[in-house]
Length: 167
Image 1 (spheres, rainbow, N blue to C red):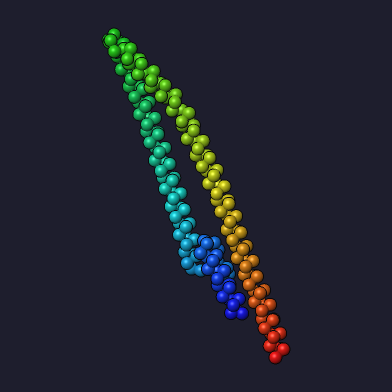
Image 2 (image 1 turned 180 degrees about the vertical axis):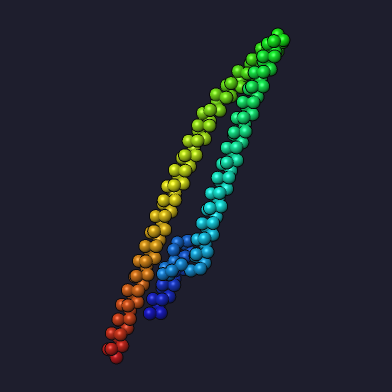
């Protein structure tokens, strides 16, 4: 019985050292704390990602606002230049065309950003679903291991009684 218990302890150490679930029937306080810590870290990272995403979105919106303001300002300048028949008229028109071109390039980038956000949300949802499935499987494994240990102990007690009755 002692070698059985020692073997069981060795199995627990091997499994614990490999980063997998231990064979104990309930999580130790250390395991619970590690789980909480991992969950807390995951949530903190998610919040950081959301915060950074919002910062990037705000920067893009500010940039778009600046571009629109600059476009209006350049249009006003162009009108003033045309009214004055300024020799810089051609260069202003060229800059205006470049601004229009950049505006056209910004639209697909905005759509791509939205598409990537949707993909991220879908991937996060799939990740969370698999994580829930993993938790269910771990729970089932713990139940099975616990039941197996209980049955083995019962059988060992029966064998021990049989051996005692032979004496």
